[in-house]
Amino acid sequence: MQHSCKYYLSDLNELKERGLLKAFGGGNQVPKRIYTLEELRLNKIEAEKFLSPADETLNTVRTVLQGAGLLGLTTAFFGLHLEVSQLAGLLVGIGFVFTADQIANSGGLEALLVDTAGRVISSSYGDRVALHEAGHFLCAYLVGLLPSRYTLSSLDALKRYGALNVQAGTLFCDSDFQKEVASGTLSSSSLDRYTCIALAGVAAEYVHFGQAEGGLNDVQQLDGLLKALQFTQKKADGEIRWAILTVVTLLRRHRRSHKQLAKAMAAGKSVSECLAIIESNFPREDTRDPLAA
Image (cartoon, rainbow, N blue to C red; front, top):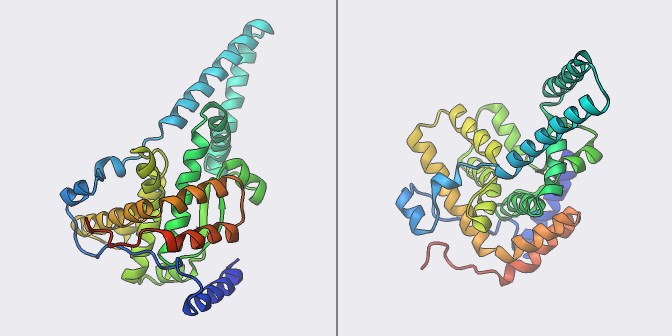
C-alpha cells in the first residue's frame, strides 16, 4: 500500500501542477492564530459540546443487548430446566469469551456485535457513521492528504482485513507524517493537517446533528499527540480551536460534496469514485473567505 500511495501521490501532484485537480489541497483554511471561545461561538460553534462526543446510540444498543442476553439466560434456565451449576458455567464461559476478546482483539468481538446490532436497532446510526467517515475523507483531501481506503462498519472491516480489532475508519497515504513522528520532529504544517483530519469526523457530526456521538478516540489520540509534543495547555487549546474553526468551515462550505460523499461511501464506491465526487463539486462550492460575513 505504501508503494501504491507513492505512485498515486506522484500522479496527483502532477495533475495538480497541470491545473487538472482543484480540490486536492485546495481547501481554504482559516488564518492561523489563537482564537477565543467567544470567536468560536460567533461562528456558531460550541467547543465544549464539540469536544465531548457521547455515543448515546451505541450505549443504548449495549443496554438492549445486555437485556436480551439476560432474558435469554433466564428463558434457558427455566425453559430447559438447567441446574444452577449449569447456569453458572454459562456465565463463566461468556465472561471468559469477552475477557479473551478484550485481551486478544482489543474488544473487537464486542464492537462487531454492538456495531452490527446498532444498524438494526437504529435507522440513523449507519447514516451518522457514513457522514463521520466522509468528514475525515473530505477534509483530508481538501488539506492535501490522500485517502487510501475506508470501512464503515466492523463487519466490513472483518470481511476486508480478516481482523476483529479493525473498526470503521479511513486510512491515508501518510508515510511522510509517520516518518516525522518516528524521527521525533513534526513540522507545523504536518501537525496542522493531522489536527484537522483528526477532528473532521466529530465536526461532520456536529455540523449535521449539533452533537457528535462518535470520535471520542480521535479526540483522545490528538490530545495524546499534543501532550507527547509537550504542548502547554494554552498552545494546545490554540491549535485545537484553529482546527475546529477550519474543519467546520470546510464542511459548511462543501456541504454538497460531503452529503454526496457519505452516500457514495455507504454504497461502497471506490476511493477513486469518491475523489471524483469531490473534484466535480469543487468549482461550484463557495470559495469565499471563511471568516467573511
